[in-house]
Amino acid sequence: MRKLTGLALVLCSTAAFAGAQVYEPLSASVRAALSKAIADHAVPYLAFASEAEARAWLRAMSKKLERRMPDRVVREEFLVTVHYEAKRAGLDPQLVLAVIQIESNFRKYAVSRAGARGYMQVMPFWVNLIGTRDHNLFHLRTNLRYGSVILRHYLDMEQGNYFRALGRYNGTLGRPEYPTMVVRAWLNQWRYPVRTAESARTRPAS
Figure 1 (cartoon, rainbow, N blue to C red):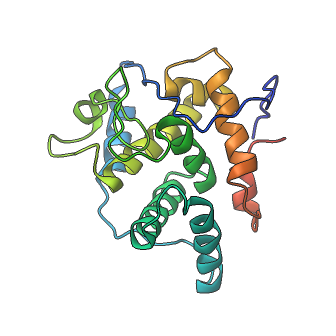
Figure 2: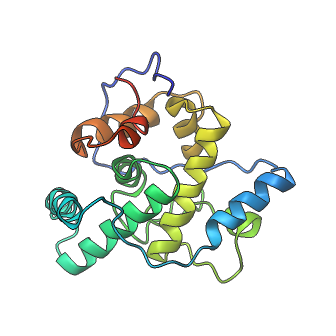
């Protein structure tokens, strides 16, 4: 995993910093792979080695999120879906929570000035590019599925460089503000004990 070279973790904000992914032509193979990644319909679940570990994570994250999502049922459905979609895309769930915090401040129906939608502020052009017309970007799981798959795509494109991948995700490539805020939230506000070598590999070196 590449280090976040030159990324000073000095900024953080509770306000949304919504941006907009920039349309870039995709090769047929990449487009097909992303479309396949969007298409799965399995029921979300917490992917832990034991029920006790799953409950511990859900309890810890629920406590952090309680002020923003007071309804316990809604909060837990949200967290289970975040965890499932993040792990499915090979991402740390805490990274996805940090992206959501900075992009939309956990507002389901947030819309940016550029037209990005939902929790992870996904641009509508992605639906035409890799999805189907019936995909609603304000739907919880659809939004988290798209956002996680897109972020994974950018990480692969940038060979694991979080600074550049997050910049692409927000449409601010080359500027430090957005990746700095996301990584600060990831490592501080959403920190959770790293239990396995696999989860350790999904974090940036600090």
